[in-house]
Length: 224
Image 1 (cartoon, rainbow, N blue to C red):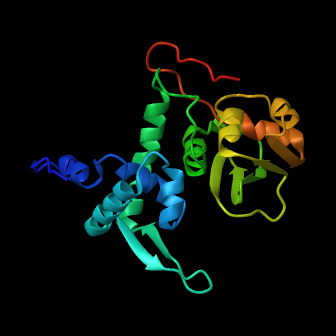
Image 2 (cartoon, helix red, strand yellow):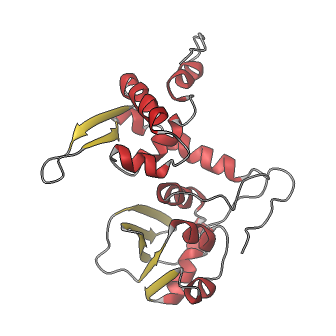
């Protein structure tokens, strides 16, 4: 990996995380530690050799650390260091900035972590006016708690004891139900989603996310 050989802190930051896949590895670790196979599952376009190389580089730089989970798991995981977690704000701003692109590839598939972080970034507080709400999201075998209070969203891995609604779906369908504005009824009919609890509140939750205005020409709609 070549250096910019520039004393500017921004150039030094890019020496650390500017290589292809590096920031996306950080994205994959923002929601918690992962095994190598789980990181690779979230980045299917990267080869195992490239991911290994980037992880070694990030570990040497102090952005990522490795540790072994206690039994019965007893597997090695990668996690962000305290300094590495400081990149979350940068990832969020990149998500918001990229979402304004008129050429954003809306129909390209995304992984679970990318969708959750996108929802964090594109939440519209005004749409939650006067509502306290707890929604359980189940994406594959993973659980995420979405809690809305005082027009603020807390969206994290985990379970909620008494959610108002539970939405079970896949990452791609969740993306289309939120920023793609696909009808929940259509997704339910196509068996791409299941809702238990209050369906009206589930629909209101899904409507709390918006793509920002395009920075240029009108972007194409999602394929339905």
